[in-house]
Length: 198
Image 1: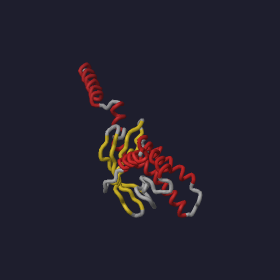
Image 2: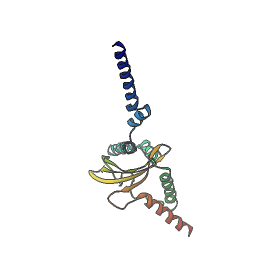
Image 3: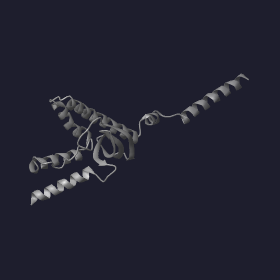
């Protein structure tokens, strides 16, 4: 009888170990389960970018409202936003447009009729909401959200690319119109080059 109880206990222990090994989650799988999906990473990144950008813009708005003349630090930080949060191709286009406008359109409006971060010229009380990742791969993503500015709400779409493991904005679009800034920038650069070659 003792031998039977011993064998039953050993068999039960072996069965228990087999079940744990077979149905248990490996350390690699557990880590993967805990990691956010690409869509979650992209949505979080967009929120982080706009929190930082609009934090600065709202600070600048506050300085303007207080008639504080020295906004140099804020202006320098504003210029760094493009480098920190936009793709290399976007930065190259911005640089090329700035060069064209400084050479051929001094004292004129040039290309930039509006600020792409706020999709307008003036701002107050900026924020974004309702972030939706429309499509994503490991390298590219399309995101839409509502941009709140001056008590209005505007749907905006941004395209992101993954550069060296960091999601960066590669294009800004107005979701309720055909405004595609990157396409417009490329067209402007091409037209300006053709005119300067004449």
